[in-house]
Length: 103
Image (cartoon, rainbow, N blue to C red; front, side, top):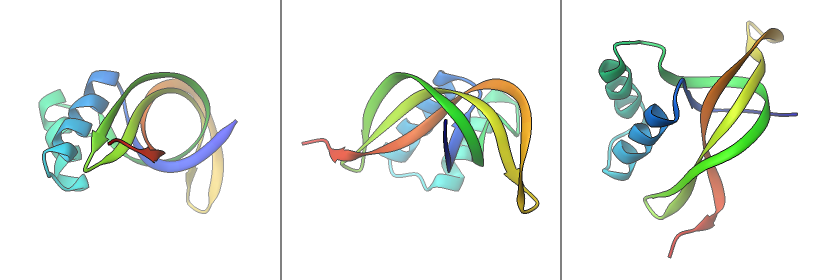
């Protein structure tokens, strides 16, 4: 099990759209709002603190020279109100910045 804070989306396509917007120069908030507007869902993508079980890496792309991976995760808890709360397991797609650089 891992935990972290980052951008998670309901679908891999939404996560990919987010990465493309960031690669095009959009700020984080602007990219999230645009993806959510396209999805007609204000919670399609967003910043979250979650505990999860990491699954398959779906895709890796460059954002301003830094590698970003779209990873399928199974969220099992969320952090809110100063504590962790277990949630019914849900599949999400996390945008995870990797330590490598794309040359």
